[in-house]
Length: 247
Image (cartoon, rainbow, N blue to C red; front, side, top):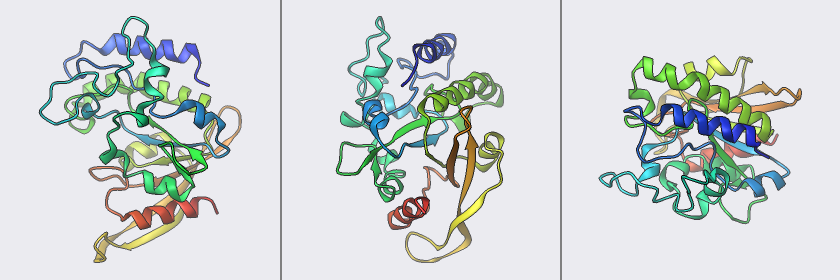
């Protein structure tokens, strides 16, 4: 499902930038996360989208040194990217971060994990497959630009190969609008916070379209990010988003 050509392009991109100060060391390019085989067999193909991988993917605790602790199968000589990334959610995933997307996936009868849900989702990153320290928002504009140009190309090629039906996207709105050009339609508006208090500004979830080269129209569901994707709404509200996406 993912071509050798794209894997080679991703590895070349990594080799070009791996020695830059902001790129986590040691690390590997994270083209995607998730069970690729199960995704390919899913009738509903769902992909989640962030900015770039967290530096915490390469350590279990904040004060640990960076390592391949979550990627024990990685062989730097063999460059076995697919066999390293596909079992990610079966080993030591960064659950706290991915738990922000999981309830929406569950509302779609999907999950990142081996579970009773009907469909298996994958995660991707739109700005770059490289983990950075500091995080993306704290990088200089010059470094962001250097990583983003080809990073976005890689992401677009990946999406063409994955052929998703639905993408769940929670990134800054300005970044979102620079990639997803269609006009959006409101799916749902949440007027209350997680604790039930009224919001000063309602949380809007919108649906857009992303057209693949195959002419397929992908449903893109957007919600504003905070510290984490869809971070300021409750799990029950997230499940509702997933359910509404199927209508």
